[in-house]
Structures are given as C-alpha cells and as structure tokens.
Image (tube, rainbow, N blue to C red):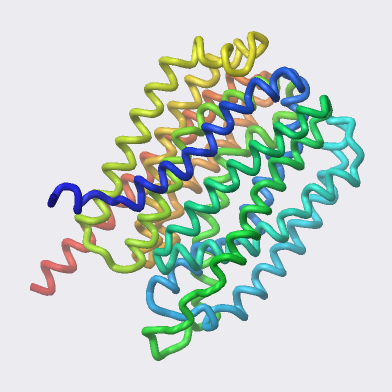
Length: 413
C-alpha cells in the first residue's frame, strides 16, 4: 500500500492522456502517407513547424511565470495585467515575422499565402489557451490538462478521418485538422473548467518587473527548447526537397513519442518545484519520467525498421535510420529539459535555461557550418550533438547549484 501511495499517479495518468497523441499519430499515419505521400507530408511539415516555433516566441515565457507565481500562492488577478501586456507585445512581433516568412512557405508548398496566414493566426487563441493551461498547472489541477490532451487527440483523429473520407489529397485541409483539433479541445476545456482559484495565500502583490524578469529568463529555456526540436524542420524547406522533408517529418513524429512522457514529467516537476516540494519528491518524479523515456526510446529504435514502413508505407523506409538517430537526441534533450524546469521552479529561470540555450547555440552553429552539405541525416546528427552539449551544460549547472546550497547550509550551521 505504501508503494502504491508513493507513486506519482497524476504523472501516470498524464502519460496515458498525452500518450493518446502518438497513438492517434500511428493510427492516422497510413491515412496521411497514402493520401499525401512524401511530398505532401513535407508540405504539411512546412506549414506546421514554423507555427510551432512561433508559438514559443509568442508565449515569451509567460506560461512558466504564471505557473511559478500561482504555485507560490498568488492569485490569477495579481498577474493578469502584466501578463496581457507581455502577450500582446509578443504576438505583434511574431505576427510581423510570420507575415514575411509566409511568402517563402507559400512558394515552397504552392499554397495560397492568405490560406497559410489564416492557419497561422491560430497562435492568438493558442496563446490564450496556454496561459489558462499554465494556471491549472500552477494549482496542480492536472485533470483538465489531461482531459484536454486526450480530447485533442480524439478530435484530431476524427477530423483527419473525415478529410480522408472525402478523398482530399491536398496538405492544407490536414493542416487545418491538426491545428483545429488543439484549439477545439482547448476552447471546450476552458468552458468546462472555468472556475479557477482566485484566492491568494500572499498578502503582497507580484511586482510587474519581477514577473517580466522571470518570464523573459524562462523564455530563454522554452524558446531554446523549441528551436532545438523544430529549428531544423523550420529551415530544411530551404535546403532539401519536399519529399526529403516528408521523410524527416515522419522520423521526427516517431522520435517525439518519448517527448510526450517528458512533457508530463516536466509539467509535474515545475509545479512541484515551484511549490517547494522536497528533493525526494522531485527525484521520484524524475526517475519515473526518465525510465519511461529511456524504455520507450529503446523500444521504438528496435521496432522502427519494420514498424515505420508498416505504419507509414514502404516509401518512408529511408526515414528509419533518421528516426533512430533522433531518438538518441530526444534522450539527451530530456536531461537538460528536466534540470531546467526544476531550477526554474526554484526561482532560477536563468540558470535553468543555460542547458537549452547552449544546445540552441550549438544547433545554429552546426547548421550554419553544415549548410552547403546539409541533408536529413546530417540534420539528425546535428540534433544529437547539440542536445548532448545542452545535457552536459545542464548537469554542470545543477552540480554547481547543489554545491552552492551545500556550502550555504554548512555556513548556516
């Protein structure tokens, strides 16, 4: 009974909910492969991946700051004004960048620029939903988060099947299905779970400057993590063909299955760390998370030679070695991501971001040096190298931080 009580059941439930996304991905993979082929998959990735990067910049670390201050006992109203100003400012800048980049994506995909911009306006509603999600996370109300993720997967499955039933061969309707599923789930859950804890255990209000500082420092980690996972896909359309991009997109889809487990682990770690939980609680959550990530990555690496052609079609066989390389990168990325959220939860978002920032710098540097010879295999190895650098830097930062605390405790005693 004690063992059962000690297990972080919310994370296990989160694994099931977040695991529904890759399961749906495996179900819809044959549909997309046969409806779009490698070139169509590349067009789909070309529209969706820049949107993912844009979402990270639009958030500007605000969700992490919301979680931190809510977990520390502040009310939603304490942070509402400064949150809104930051989000509106970031959305204006990101929207301008997307406007210019849409021309290149329209030329690559042969899809009307207006339609691409219409798809990308989803970052506005997505940012609002992510802030609500961060509030639930800060209050450790994980039920709505899990329900949102599960319902998003089910809606996505239904929409993709519906599009396929009509025999559509264009990538754009499938992109709408991907984006629309998340927005519909977020809207529904926001309406069902409208009551949030407005009370506060703090008598002092959050200083706007402190909130901005935390958000900006936290954004270094979140943006860097997104760039580490998406930058290669965002710029590959300028270096490889749509068919090769489609192969890479499939490899990333499979390699990111363990990433789902990492999201749940980090969600719980940030809330626990921000709430001042003991190190033993954080350690237990991290061990369970890494065990799931490692086992899932190994299983996928072994199964991919026959599972990928079976699920996606024989034309996606070249994605197998790329998938195995990217799975290794996922494991390294989980290390600095985990350490980053723990340090951020302890009030050190700048230190927490160092691992992700170093990985991003290495990614940009290696992509620049390798650009003349860049292909999907080299891009995958660049991901491994940069994620490894980020993991090493994060571990060194954590060791330094623990030693610093040990010295402070010895002086106090």
